[in-house]
Amino acid sequence: MKCQHKIALMKYTTKNFWLLVIPLLRGLAAVGLDFYGFYNWLRGAYWDIMVILLIIGLAYFRWKNIRYEIREDGIYVKDGIIVRNEFTFPYKAASCVSAKRSVFLRPFKAVTVSLDSDSHSAANKRGKADVELIVPYEDYREIYGKMPKDSSSMKINYHASKRDLFLFSFVFSSTLSGVIFLGTLFIQGGRIVGSELEDIFFTAVSDVTQVVQTIIKGVTPFAVALTLVIAIGWGFSFVSNLLRHMDFHIKRYGENIFVENGFFTKRRYYINYSKINCADLRQNLLMKICRVMSVHASCTGYGKEKNGIPVFVPITTRNRVMDSMRLILPKFTVSSISIKTKNSYIIAFIWVPILLAAGFPIAASIIRTAFPRWDSIIDFLVIMGEIPSIYLLIVKIFAKFTTGIGFDEEMVTLKYCSIFQFHTVIVPKSKIVYVRLSQTIFQRGTKVCDVLVYTRGEHASRHRIRGIPISQAENFAHLCSL
Image (cartoon, rainbow, N blue to C red; front, side, top):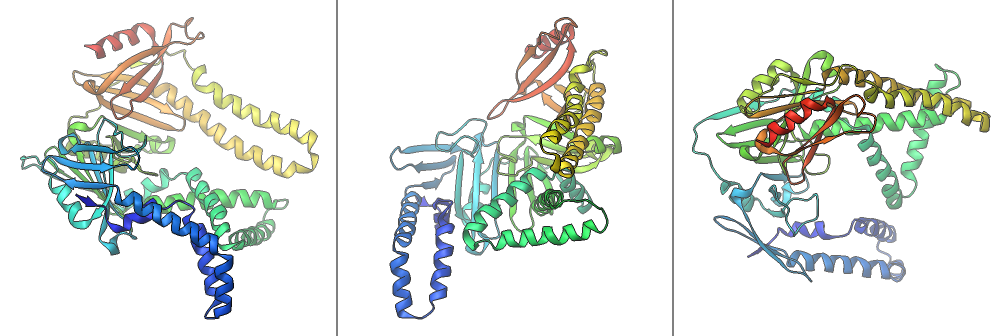
């Protein structure tokens, strides 16, 4: 049996490892070749050095106790220090196998290989792949070579254009993830290099404030700082998404699907077509108006890693999406909507955005009486809160008239809205785990209910369709049980 690639040792060091190493090396570099200075540095850094050696020793011990063997029918894995785990992951059980060749691993000819199935491995934590190993490049090629092969001669290629990838990254970039990254950068980076990062940021805020104040009078540094954080956070998310999905293309060989993408970090996915649980056509309001969409696939393991998006077709026109799906996902066809939300059922869709839109000015007037000097900051925050509230209200009005259920002999189509995003989910009846009808006290008088459809996967996914007449909902639930 083999150990993982030696570079995997770095994986098993603690997250704070570099917070100890980098300041230690900075102190050593400052000493130079002075012997007495080196001696004093060694005395002062004695405990830090001992902690680093302990971390490296524990990492080596963990690395040495994880072994694997590539067999004809599956991968045999043995791991654990106190509690030993031994299991075989059969190739035929794989729903998705992903290989990641990051820019840091490529010089060492190492690849991170993750194997996932609809079940959950006892060896890894919840949310992680069933098997995750850092292996030499040759072993990665051998593992992919042993995946179940389809004898069909059918070969289909789909290559996303740069324009489609640009639009996809623009739409699906998350300001929140970018802001979280910035916060981590300032907190952890400040520990490593001192206050340099904070000084750079506050200098930038001061400079931008002076420029903006020449155009808009009364602007505060707080408003500039918040706007700058949001803009930089979204920009970082946009660039990372674009680089992640660069050179995106899909190859289908019969029942085997291969997805490849990435600029710096090269990713390759093997997907078992029969293990795809559902297809999700996603749109935001602007995309809906412009009649463009993207296709995402629910398959255990695909898009599972941090910041991963299980995209099959990046943003393009509806006609091109349907043409691509006929080639890549031929069984997943959209059914016409036959069960719709009750015409009079609208309050449940719009009460939250109306409450938010009315709540911000009311809360601002109360806070202004307690802190009269914060007028400019409070006004700015009210505007920042009103914009998404009004946008959410428009989205929910659209959602009221587009929500519904369609079905045919094999497929079910679910159309609903989740916060700002519209979903058209196409799921085979065989992949529906169960259907639950939920009715609030307010819905009983109008004889409507919410239909909750749970689809198969490592963890069942829930799809909620609001305001369906109770008689039609019961008929649909009975149909799915047949």
